[in-house]
Length: 369
Ligand SMILES: *Cc1c(COP(=O)(O)O)cnc(C)c1O
Image 1 (cartoon, helix red, strand yellow):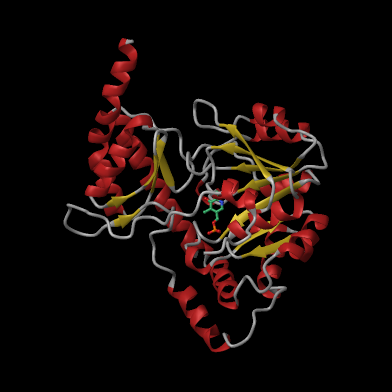
Image 2 (image 1 turned 90 degrees about the horizontal axis):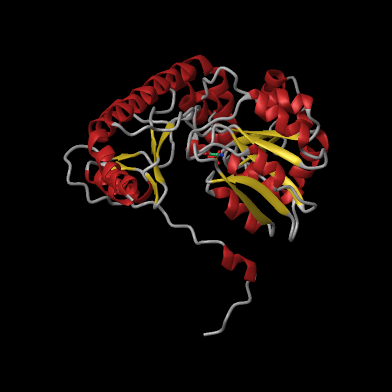
């Protein structure tokens, strides 16, 4: 068998492992996939109707400039079309940002643990991911991130709220950080969960875009808007960057149906916001249950919770799976569970004492040393 000559640096990227398809649930009733932070609500009828209307046009390529959607976003954010760059999900937007700023050997700086796609996309861009550990309370360590800036740093990602820990940064600390970042380095605020973030002093990414000429914001329709399957997201970026992002974008990467669904979703925002509000209430119910059970969770401002279970992570994930909840475990660290339909949240809440008990013995051992 002949060896194919592929890029050697790709060996540093772990292959994608898809989530388990068939769980061995010992439970009766439905199995809930709470591993991908999807919105549990079905698409709005107005959105599916708009998509259905456009189905007759799928023999045509989508309009690359996405004129109609771009106009809606420009109006909303008070920006120009050049500032709006769409992607096949904001994951593609993040990839564009990396490929437009960093070449071989350049550094892309972000917190860790954060969004799993960051290191993979950075390596795929040929860049070097520089991962700055979160603080002990699972938050971005902005001082350490600033200290990690080098001559090779081209891009800094700030994920707020952070996936998978749900933690946030405040206005004052972000401002202090940005004031110290050299202005030639692009800083992206990834606001995939911004609609779920009810922190009082939360920075608003778009305001930082207005104030700092090196700041861009990444938004997605996958989470609060419930369009994960449509694959659409966007960046609001300074003009010079916007022009560059278009050069590295996948041609025709955003379908007409996705553009249509996004416009219809923006038009139905009140309905979607009501859903977000319900998920936020559910999130607080889950957090409260774990607190009562004796496991303190970091304050989550996303549509998910982070259980910092350390060595008990795998056991907890197994326990949850047996009860029909497929979560996202990071062995040795913790697990992320999406706040989903009430029935799924109810199951998680019911298991809170058992999960908390998995951690308690380990703590007792540590304390006795
Ligand atoms: C889900 C997510 C995204 C975007 O996902 P897409 O479906 O590609 O739009 C981006 N950033 C973070 C941190 C996310 O969790």
